[in-house]
Length: 486
Image (cartoon, rainbow, N blue to C red; front, side):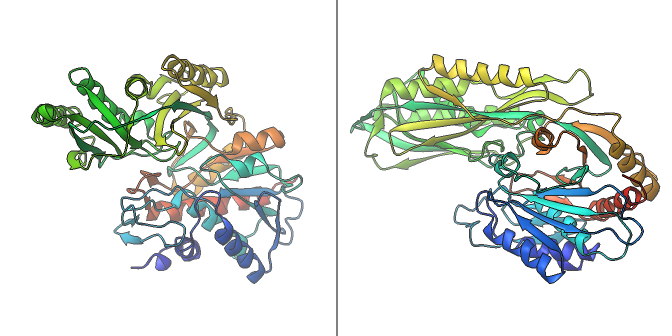
């Protein structure tokens, strides 16, 4: 069966089209044009602000004009991760397909985060089969790499008093809070030196890890490729003279790194000792991550003598800093069971052209002071290693309101349709809701969505029956709010 033929057909037809539209963060021109063309085709009012956010508006069905205006909200961009380095997210469609009860993809992220939220919002705007009050649909840009759209939302773009964020990933759950976050970057400046001629050079690859969302999956204990790579290099440098000429790992601040590599040199007399050490290390990791990282693969291949090596002082400081840097869950919430309160993700290591190596980390917490505490700990750690450190602007969390009227309506809607009481939760991932509250403090908000798994990784997939329940819940919420008075 093709995606466009799945139920609810109105949603999956649009989602199928969205998978064919390139939409990396900060490059949302094509998906924005698709949304505006959709609005024009269906006679829906639209507007765009200076930063590139889009709002569509439809009036209430007759007799429901006095109901509060509801805002449907999702983001246009997607995380771009692929097992195939030649895959071009700027030009190629996502190779999505149906596998039983799941929509999957072949080796890339699916973009259901948040393509399904966009698809459901557009389907609602064109759906004439139910009664509702006034509805607005807000589509933000660049959520995944900086929440730029939410930060710069134009004045008077939205007028509603209720906001339904459609960017959550679990069926039968209603979210009423999320973590805030901030990025921290460390900059190591290095000097180039000649690569010794009496050394042999190897490329060490760590690959095949699960990765995943640095908020939603951080508690699962998945391996971090940057940490695994530098753990081996640290052990090796304690026994042998090692030179490093190249190091690279991870890609996105909000994804647990799945792969990393380094090009290193070792004296010709140490070749077999290094291979033996790598075999032992690989066996140790396979034992440590048995059942958790079945795709873990560590390889060592010979390469030509590189043009240069990173100076010894900097390379050792970098290896030690990455190996010892905090990563993972820092603390759990004392208020909500099984909720991560504070975490940090050692996201990426990149060599820049100006003889600088940039280490990017991302901190999250549902407690603002703890967010900055762990960010400052990360700063202190890299300062001790001799790096320069900067923090991003960050974004606020969303404090739960357990007396929220729309929370109660959302829960009742799911109960009425499916006979199950959805769980009320907060999420450790970042949502744009906290930023909306800073601009529109009167908003009553919830977040919900269908079941997605392994988002921000090439294993991302979406449960098909959950999409039908998600869309049914969304319509029922709008019907119930449509019977209210402002």
